[in-house]
Amino acid sequence: MERQTSPPEPQRPPGAHVQPPIVYVEPRWEYRHLVRDLAEEATLDETELNALGAKGWELVAVLAHGSTAHFYFKRQKE
View (cartoon, rainbow, N blue to C red):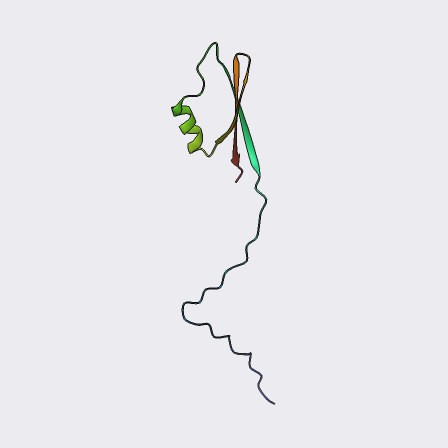
C-alpha cells in the first residue's frame, strides 16, 4: 500500500504579504439632539463641544428656530 502525502505548501518569496479579504459592514449611527433657548442661556461653548467630541459625538448640523438653537450630533454605534 502506497502512502499518500499532502501537496507541498506553495513557496512565497521572502517578505511576501497576503492581504486578508475586506468585508464591508454598513455603519450604524446614533444621534443626539440638544436644544438651547438663546434668550435664557448661551449656546454650546468650547468646553461642552470638546466633552461631546471626546465621547465620539460629531456636530453635523445647527438649526436656529426663533429664539432656540437646535444642535444635531451623530456617532457610530459600537
